[in-house]
Image (cartoon, rainbow, N blue to C red):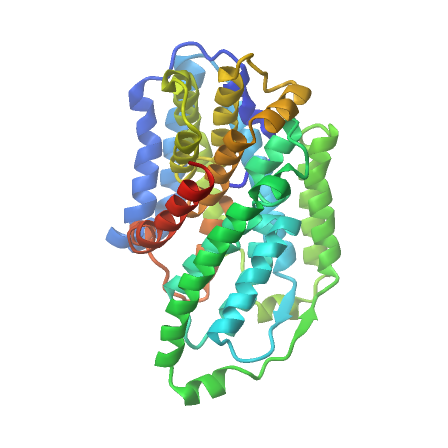
Length: 441
């Protein structure tokens, strides 16, 4: 998920007492199951009532912490995280909805590969959320006549996740590491071989699959549906608003209190919506439906995550002294289903604590020293958090929003389990396993 505010460090820096009861972990599991099975078993009821279901599960956790444990701090910080998350992803959704990118030429497999490669590079400049929101609509249009679920899945793999591991701006876990003292250029210096390896393999696999898809499309359909759009950018002035949003993100690292960047993002989205030509949004098939769905579902996810992250942090120390490869897989497997930002901080804290002599998360100079002395451990944690965010729809914030935008454009996307069983397990995980073996083990 894409959260910005480092308030989840509460679990890594404050004493939370005894671990939560095991039963309170159930709401998170139930919500995941509902997201996966609801659209399949009861699609009409799910689409009409999913927001009520999400809120009810959130209330169970709220009551547990307020009345059962009398600890309101985790809930307050979770609410701050949710507001920060929605401010970023919502503002980018609105602003990019006012930019219409025209992509010239037929959507051949090689053009698609180049497009995804450009998106991966752009993710390091405007973040995975910014790149995904800016490029998903032209990606859908340029492949309209033959687009299938794997086009959406690989877009999520590459643009919304893996692409953004070279700079702290690229993905929230890396940004939190930067806030805590990891040098800005550390990620580019240490992670580029892994990025190049994983990106290369993903693009090769995509090219093979897309070439088969391209050959099956009748040529007369290709000629009618494509190659008529010229390269142009309508609404390019909204790029200024994207810059303002990115500046608001960076303000967090300059000591600006929570709430100020979020207000700036919201005001920027309002200004962009009011000043954008409505005809551009109409050409983009823009509606608020996708962001409403993501907002309600992630409200429940952020709330029900509180006891899960709490338990993870309490029991982290029983892991002993993990190897770098174990750090990679533990951070990755948990980032696939939990918020990758607190997961990153949890294992970064564990690595700092187990170092001899121990380092401290809140001391930026010690974190920088840890990054210099233990680059392979920090690389394992960083790559696990970023790469494995692509493993499920809820692994990173843009994933579910990309899916919602695609479905609003009448594109059939894989379900929650279909995504995992048909794409994550047979394609993504083997590639990430090879990367772990070659570069971390």
